[in-house]
Image 1 (cartoon, helix red, strand yellow):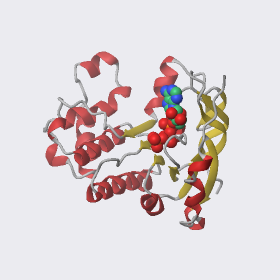
Image 2: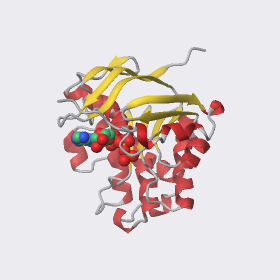
Image 3: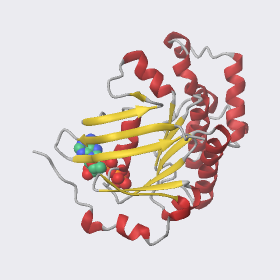
Image 4: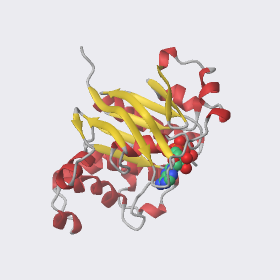
Length: 258
Ligand SMILES: Nc1ncnc2c1ncn2[C@@H]1O[C@H](COP(=O)(O)OP(=O)(O)OP(=O)(O)O)[C@@H](O)[C@H]1O
């Protein structure tokens, strides 16, 4: 069966307003259900790559397609619909700290309600039930009424994963999802992500600093160096020594445009 491309970068270039070239001519297709890990030195462009996918960063030239549709000029409702399809799990968790776990998880459905309903917290019975299911998936159902700021970092990250699940996304972007977590919590967060990927065929694009985790969880590893795609292999073909070149400091100099 033909693989379905979910994210396509076509000659994508990103130049920041100060002239730093974040991405250089990226050509890359990511397919339905893949778990893709991006590796590279600090400053190589990994976060930039992830953040172009949901238009947190706009690209400078080239084209970016999600499920075959160009996203570079989307505005208003069309942009909101795009973002609904894309779950994001970031390092800072982005939970509303003073709200309950339930409220945080339900906020994943906000894109499906008119603003006034979500402001008033008028979520349907079905969605409340879905929130319970989502929390069960990440082993957090017992904390449903706990305030987010009373949870550990790992628990907060699992709530963020449950919130993402509420969106029914086709893509999950995970930008260093396990930074500053202990090894055991790291494993449970990565396992939760893998589970969503497998059970619902969601495409995961994750930026990880750990080579060991990349080798353990990825179906495919891509490497960036100084904004360029320098590596792209299915996990079966990856060897540890490949990382030496991706992580070569001397080649990680970013260019600047005047
Ligand atoms: N808003 C910005 N304005 C200017 N330059 C930026 C901006 N954001 C990132 N950069 C630069 O773009 C390059 C790529 O940054 P990016 O954050 O994508 O790297 P990264 O590979 O994710 O690094 P890290 O692993 O440290 O998070 C870096 O040189 C960075 O300084």
